[in-house]
Image 1 (cartoon, rainbow, N blue to C red):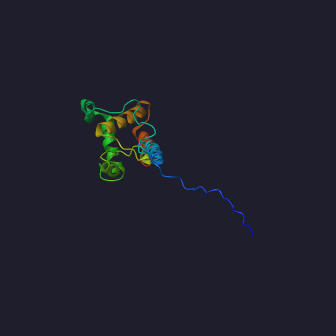
Image 2: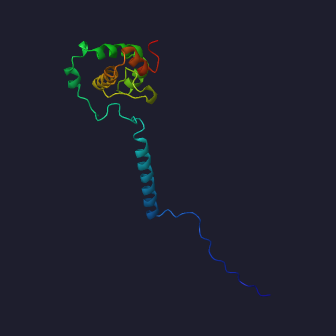
Image 3: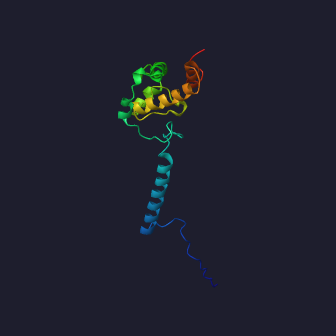
Length: 153
C-alpha cells in the first residue's frame, strides 16, 4: 500500500511581527493619538465667549487710574461682591481661588468662569453695569438682570 504524501502550505501567523519598523510605526501612532487628545482637551477650561470683547490682558495700572471709589459702578460692585461671595469667602470665589484665579462677583457662574486678576474683574463689571445704566435702566433693574432675578423684588 502506497501512501500519498499530503503537502500542506505553511500556516501564516495571524500575529503582527514586532520588528523595528513595527515598533517605530506603533510609537508614531501613539504619539499622534496623544497629540490629538492633548489638543482636544487643552481648551476645556477656557470660556466659549470672552467676557471682554477684544481684551485679553488688563494692566493692573489701568484699574488704579480710575477713581473708582467716587463712581456709581464701584458702589454697586461692592454690593454685588458682598452678595455673591461674601467678599471672596464663598461660592465661585473659593473655586477660582484654588486655581489661582478670581471671581468674587458671580460672573458667568454656569460656565465656572474665573478672571485672571482683580483688575479684569472690576473692568468687566464696570463695563457691564455702566452699559445698562446708560441705557436707562435703574440700578435695581440692572441687578435683577445680573443676578437672574435673585436681587430685588
